[in-house]
Image (tube, rainbow, N blue to C red; front, side):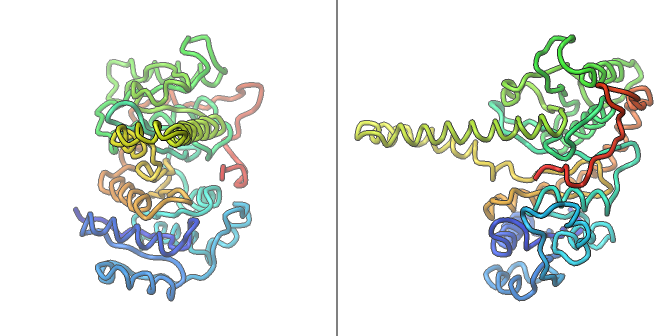
Length: 369
């Protein structure tokens, strides 16, 4: 495949240049046609590239010493977009110097910079942060929004559903992904006005005889069923989504730590661990966030992928591969097509909802870190 090059914010993440460059190099070894624009301190990048000679002919360096801090407010980071490695990586997508940007830096700052620089697609009010979570099935589940918007009305949730389904078709290969809204119960009467309104709109849009919408809406899902694999796309607002994500991650760490504690409590337990080691290693691999690394800001006029700040080089490579796959499969064009297929009724303005007037705006500092 022939792809535009990928801009990598080499200064972002907990370990910065070394891990980001190594991750890009791993991705390059897996896909020989990947090309990179490495943004950051030229001296440090060149030093890192010495360990990966195969990257020399596939990379260009854009020198920049300024870095967005991990706890920096998005509103402040925006003002330094033209001088920071993160801002220049996103700017390369806007100018066409790169087809996608990958950063492991401050999530809120990356969201704010990307939204201002790239703008949203026609028909999309707000971009959403989507990620893949492991399930009991062979496929992952797409979940959004995971923190880009603290609130979402029915119109936003419908847009999230369309974007999440398009993403799922690319990464999981489903022709019509099964989409559900996260709720406190599966009954139609449960949840907020926004949830029930969004459900009604999605049901009506997918039930039309002339609809060529590539998704199947299947009502509500509770949080304890997210990882069962029965749902392909879980849609919610960023506040609830971020809480659910952290709860899932915390539960995974709790289980692995509990097993480690149990297997080291006695000599008999240690022997049991040796016997069951293949199964525990499989569990560890399945729960390792690096194997699912690469959250995506959906709804922008361009591809921006957020790597976890503590990701290993292998995790960064996975994030780069996600960016390349979305470019190859023309994510933005798919979303635009599906929005047209959704119909005007499903995407009309809400007016007053949940006792407040929906403005469709968030402060840059409201994006989740």
